[in-house]
Length: 310
Ligand SMILES: [Zn+2]
Image (cartoon, rainbow, N blue to C red; front, top):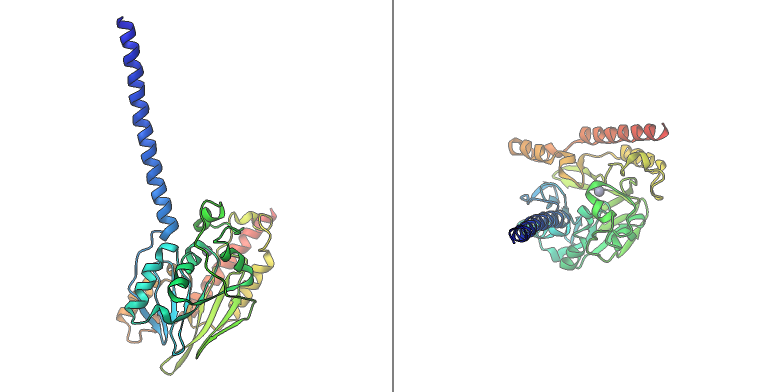
């Protein structure tokens, strides 16, 4: 009798332990899922007060993923949509500056990754703007990342097919050297493939007082991962692509250096310098930083090539 009771007690004890362990595992899974969802929605992005960089060029992005607004009398151009979850921050920034989202007539993209293309659909819906994407990235954008063959950490969930981002309507597909014009606003598309097959660097003149400055938003220079495999694990980006990219970027007489991630062009430092500067544009005139970063990316690329050849 006692033995039987012990047996029952043992069983219920085991059940209790299993329940606790099970509940713990469920809690961990819910926690991880929440984090995962958060990461895919807005990548943990925090808002940043919008500001004028120079002339008609404004910063409307977050503390890290960037969005740039170019304003004009015939409508505005917006470069990059952030994550799906950063759209409210971008919309608020545009409104705070006194501009209307409905006046954004053209949407552009640096490259077809979750953190820059994820918000395009919602921004297109809010504005009615036409979206321009390079031919080589267009299918990736139009599939919400599902056809992406390029693995970088931030895009891992998309690459693995676990999530995709809301699909915008791609209105125009373009090739290298395409010009986009809206009233006096003029942008040139420089294809700088490697980070994605159709990664696009946008250059555009910005008139600031008497100065005419060339702003260059470098599309992305990080190597696909693992770098040692990049020549055969996907078909669309080759060594020649990167060679073309470095050559193209070096040929651009960039004054204002911009990137899809604010940390890459040291936005925090530049904002600090700007607070004390007489000329608020001066901290953003950073040809040296632009060339330095191209140099660094090229070193990383050569190193990966060497490792691959070993
Ligand atoms: Zn990317």
